[in-house]
Image (cartoon, rainbow, N blue to C red; front, side, top):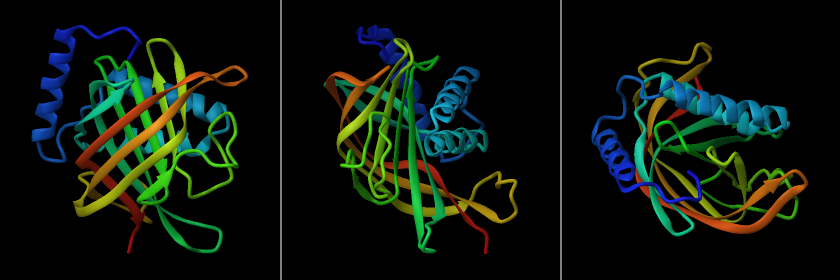
Amino acid sequence: MSRRSIRPLTLLAGALLAAACQDESPTAPAEATVDLQAAIAQAGDEAARSGDTERAEALSHGARALRWGIRPSAIEVKVRNESYTYLAIVVGVVRHRAGGERVLVRSLVAWTGRPPTALLQVISASDQALFGHPGGNSNGNGSDPDAARGHWKDLVNHELWVATAGSADLTLVDTGNPCPVQPSAPALRCLLASWDIRINGNFQLVGSDGPDGAPIEIHSNAAGVHGVVIKPAG
């Protein structure tokens, strides 16, 4: 999404498409277009090159869930107080921390436009978490495992914005039937899931030497977002 306004007809077409997706069941033939797959893959490659393996892996999980036939949900995202329709999916993965504690790391991947013009990603290891923390650095990485992380990528202007303040709620509401396609690893199991999300963040532009410029506000509030939970089998 560029800083320029989107034409009304483009917004209308996007809203109609998103509404149709939201009215359907959580599963359907894959919605991931070649352009979307390329955008997610490029963002994942850039994250991996920067050493951000967590974000790269979360993007990979989101793309995989789409290939498995999980239908994204339509959500409203406000950027600079302008409302846009995004399609979104949430993936939760059960992880083990160093002490053996199990945590559900959840990641929201949302995009707008055909082809995609913007990509929003939020990662959190709890239902409610804060963006930004004393251990953070210019790339949005830090030592606090309980902090939320947010990235908004403007694919038109090739800008990456990182959340430096605010909060993220990614709450697992329910799990249901097994995913139509299961993970290739036999030790893992995938379940259909429903999520409630609430994002309220200040995002700063990342420049060659770190965040630069005035922050922008990004907000979203949606219930029953489609997604999955990936957990150990058994």
